[in-house]
Image (cartoon, rainbow, N blue to C red; front, top):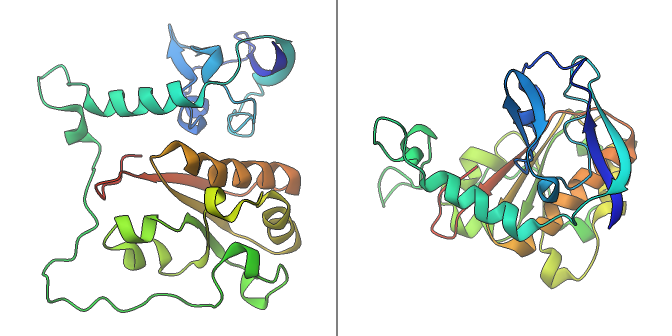
Length: 230
């Protein structure tokens, strides 16, 4: 199929690896000291790697390429977590994976929520608390799966939650208005490992691009048994 996909100019690439870290899909790797597009079907064409490249070695081109395969990307991420290190230790041991648990069952966890409402579809795009805010855009299931969600994610952030599957709505336009119309400092996306959660991640990516702003952002993925896997 004809689609937009990244192109890497090896002559400009200095092998820093920043683009590989910025690519949440795992499409880019460093081979022989240069960035390479390892799997065309892993590249979603959204260009998270473009602003990360310090030498301008990455650009878009439109050409024949396999369609983006989200299922393959998610499977590769799970398999990567199960790989063993050269020493024989499980690969997950080096990833600081932890459960969102309180230290004791009788510990009271106080709410860290700083604003209301929290549902994306109910929020006013020009609410005053967006000024200078660090945004948390979370799939609503994450707060139930991850036990220490308030302290690790909600604290010191403005919280926006939703479910792209159940809400049956595209959040991109509203998120674009929030990001473009306010002084947003950062965006953290928290999603579940299930494929349907890709909708909330993609909405944030599209909104960041449409806003025309370069804002630090990150994606954290929660497994169905309450662990951070990304």
